[in-house]
Image 1 (cartoon, rainbow, N blue to C red):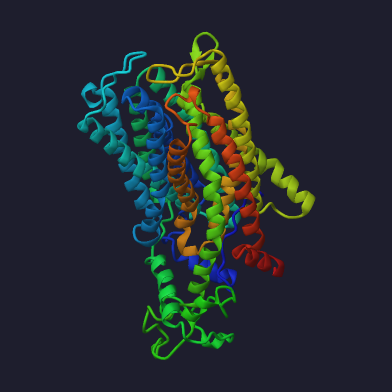
Image 2: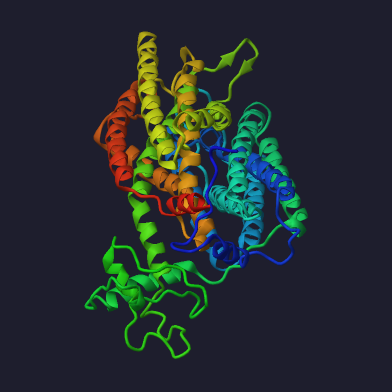
Length: 577
């Protein structure tokens, strides 16, 4: 049994049969749909789309610098905005999937957007009038892109970003919805992330090598081909999927809780169950919860029955005046998670900055492996992906099972996230030490203040960057699946697509925060000039070591006071059985 199993959330006070019935209402008729047979289509779709998306995204900084004559730090800032958008867009897809269109249609539309965007990028790489002239080696006179060239470039990036951003986590929700048991869902997520990382590795090694060594046009064209192939396979599996049937926006019900609580702010809160509204769907027969919990008692007023709230048939007469107890508890769950969510933002921010700075460091280091092979700078971060994929498998097969046999308990999502914090801080410290050594070599060889479009290459192997990237991957193997497990387990059943997209939102916010932080560092210090050989990137890393320690302390404080909602209910139910 997988140690990273996801427990299907159960509503407070409800029995398992009721939960199964409520979940089955989301699924299309036909008991033969779903199951592990659909995994082939989901995994093949994921592979094609991730090879395509990662192929252009991971090498974007290099493409902007080499083909569009963008300065190095400016290129990293553009990359931050693009990555931030890619990771914030999934919430839009989640809202559409949960509330209106369903996962299948959202994945289909976003995959088409991705294909169109990559085709536009391919045109910029193959048609000479859609990109500026190359800068000469050592030249300070570089042509800036025209408005038309920038328009085509940014249109392609925007469409490809929307597609890549939406499809990843909506596809995860669609895949998880094919299974009834928490064990199967847990195994699915493990393999989903393994395939995700593996596809990104293939893209970072193969596609990026073609872009750097053969042709940008051929590389982007291959991305378009993989995107098209993934989309075709996804459509071929349509007849086998369980299709979720959205029943209106869950976000509206959460907003109603807030409005109703404010309107009843002068009503006294009762501790007796009979004064609260327990049903859902305007009088449905299923009672979900008894008395609301004492935490955030102000919101409990939203479920209090007052005169005129309920019709004679038991349905809600004034939707914005009263909510069910379960809707109140759902909102409370989201509020409880917010502090933990905030700590993850500042866990991801240094990783974002480290990734971009590592590419700039690689451009200024000796990337040769032997006399004939040179590692593409954009591929250097593939070490993180390889490390993450390997350690996810190792942790799942050995570490978690060993932990459970020694302690009698599974490693919780919060414990995994906490371990990720530790590895992240360690990676920043290693990065600072490696960069200090690189700067010393650069200064010893008088390579600072280099005249030209990029920093001079330091006689130091880029292999020195591998240890810090391996440690980052180890951290991601802990905190990335840990975060997804936490959100998927704790979020309301009606918000599953939102749950799986929460980690993406974290990363998206982190990209925007990192952009602001880099701008602040550039304006306040001299650590990040265009020529990093004349800068102090090591000081940037040391700053994030200190901030990481402070954030880890904040996380431990939040984790200490957080109480699992659905995990505890599942454990109690299993004990009773």
